[in-house]
Each structure stands twice: as structure tokens, then as C-alpha cells.
Amino acid sequence: MKIFVQLAVLTAICSLSTHVMAEGDATAGENVYKKCKICHQIGDGAKNTVGPEQNGVIGRKAGTAEGFNYSPAMKEAGEKGLVWTEENIQKYLENPKEFVPKNKMAFVGLKEQKDRDDVIAYLKKFPAK
Image (cartoon, rainbow, N blue to C red):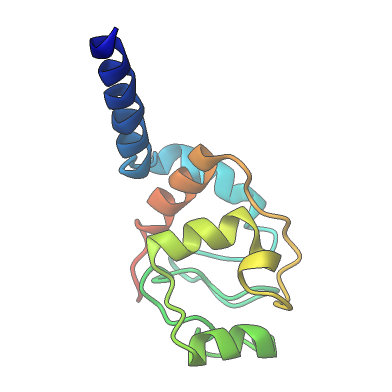
């Protein structure tokens, strides 16, 4: 019986580790990103529109895309040190209003972990210009 408990614990740990280290699928992420294109542009010729352009967002300090008029909440988050790491993007995309309260983004978030992983993989294809 002891061996079964140990195997169950090991299996649970391995599944958590696999999930945390999961890489997204950029091709699937491009499809999920269509929800974002309503407000954001990415790729060659991307410009700020309703939301800031997304080239180089990974590693960017929050509230600092040149030429975009951010909410005071997002500017303050950046001033306090928020950087768009993959981990922070995960949290933000899950629930934008909770992660940065009073920000302007009206999007409710991506509830599925796989969708967030895939969008991040897609964003990684577009470094800063």
C-alpha cells in the first residue's frame, strides 16, 4: 500500500511540473490572439490602436510602449516595477482587472491555461523592433 501512495504523490508532482514547464504552441496562439487583435496589433507595421502594439511585450516594463496613452493604474504598475515576464503575462491574461486593478483593458481574460500558454508562445515570435 505504501508504494501506491508514493506513486500517487510522484505522479501528482510530475503532472504539476509538466504543467508549469509547458510550452505553448505559437500556431495555436496565433488563432487565440485573434481575440486580442480587436485592440492590439503585432508584427511588421504594428501600431498602437485601442491598446498598445505588442512587439517586444515580453520583457517590457508595464505602461511604457512608446506613444500609447496608458491608464494611471498601468503607468503606476510599471513605475512600481511590473515587467511583462511570461509569468506576469500568464496572470494578467487570466484576469486583467484583478492583476492590475483599474486598468483600461476591458477584456475579461483567457480562462484556459493552454490558451494563455499558446498566446505567450505566439508573442515570443515578435521581439521589439
